[in-house]
Length: 558
Image 1 (cartoon, rainbow, N blue to C red):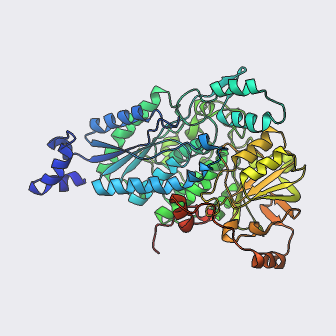
Image 2 (image 1 turned 90 degrees about the vertical axis):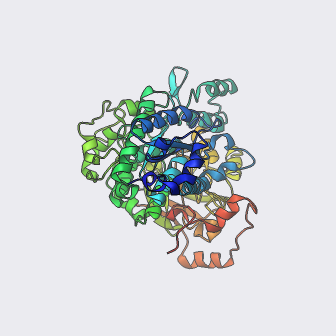
C-alpha cells in the first residue's frame, strides 16, 4: 500500500492534505500514489534545455496511470563553458553528484513520495540521480534527455569535441584558421541534448538502460525526437506500476546488473568516468565492486562500437543502428540476462530480436572494431591502487610507451609547456595535484589532451594524471591514479627525467625507481597548501574518497 492511503486519509491526514491543496491538489489526487518528478531543467546547458517538455510528458503519463505527480527541481550544470577559464570551475563536476543526490534525498524523504521519475541528462547528473535512487530505494525510473543531433561542417558531421580539438591544437598546428573555428562554432551544437559522441553523458544514458533503470531502447533516442516524449509518457505510466508492485532499485541494480553495465561500457568504448560512477552506485547499494571487477571484464570484452572518439560515427548513428539493445544482444553470452528491469521484464526478454542495423556502427562481437575493451585498469609502483585508461583512443604504437617525465602541477601549466614546445617527442607529461583532494574536485584534463590530439602529438607524447578526463578525450592518456598526489601517492614525488613505463596490454604503469627510492622521496615530501580554502569544494576535499572508491563523499557509518 502506498503512503497516500496511510497518511492522507481521515482527520489525521487533514494537515497534510491542507498543505498540498494550497497548490490545487484535490482529495482524490492525494489518495493516489505520490510520484516525485525530478527535473534538471536549466537554460544554461543544452543537455537540460528541453526538460520542461519531457517533464510534462512524464507527468501526463503518471496522471493517466492513476498517480499524482509532484514536480521539483534540482541543480544541473554543463562544464564546457568553464573549460580553460581562469576560475577553474570544472572542479565542481564531481561534487555535484553528492549535492544533487542529497537534494533529491531531502525532498523525497520530507514529502514521503511513493516513487520517483528522475529526468536527467549530462555527465555527473545522471549518476547523481541513480545514486539517489539507490540511497532512497523507493520505486524509481530514469528518463534521460537523449543526444543532440550532430552539426554539419564542410559536408561532414561534427560534434563539440572536434571544435575543442581544432581550437586547442588544430590552430597551433596551422590545421584550422580563425574563420574555420568561428564557422564550426555556429554548427557544433545545433540544438538540445547531450553532445553526440560517446562522452560521459551518452555513456551514462546507455549504462542506465543496461542497469535496467530506464525503459528498453530509450537511452539514445535523440533529444528532439517525438519518441523521446513518448518514452517519457510511458515512463510516467510505468512508475505507477512499479509503486503498486513494490519493485525497488535494489532489486534491479544488483551486483549482476552492475557487472552487466561494466561489460556494456567496455563494449561501447565508454567514458572513463563511468568507473567512478559505477563504483559509487555499488557503495550506495552496499554491493562489493572494485577495480578488479573492471579489470577481469576488460580482458575478455572487445569494443564493438565505432562511435566518436572510438570511430567516425555519432550517437545518433548508434541509435539508428539499434542502440543499447542491439549492443547488449551482441553481448548476451557475457551478460546476466535474468536481471530485472523497470518495465517488469528481464533483460533477456527485452533483448529478444534486437540486432544491429548497421555493422559499420555496431559490429558483431566476433568481428570487433577493437580487440581490447574500452577501459583498462593499470597498476604498478606509480599507481598502487590503480589507474584508468581508454585503450580504444590510443594509437597502436602508443599502447606500450616508455619515456622521460615532464612534471606539472596543473593542466594549465602543462598546456603552456605544450604550446611553448617544451614537451618533446617521447615524453610523458605528468599532471598531479588534480585529484579528488588536490584539485579539489578531480578536474578533467581537457586542455592538454585536446591540444596534443589537435596538434597531432598523441602519436608520440603520453599523459598521466591523478585527475580525470572528459568523455571526449582521445590520445595516450592515463588518469585516476590512486593514491593521488595530495594524499601522498607516488605520483607526488615524480621528477623531471624519471622514466615512466605505460603498458596497456600488460596493465602496467610504473616508474623506474626502486621501492626504497620511492619511500625515501615520500619521506622528504610535504603536501602543498590547499588550492582552495573556502566553499563547498573544501568540504568535499576533506571528506572525499580516492578515485578507486568512486571519488565520492562517504555518507555511511560502518
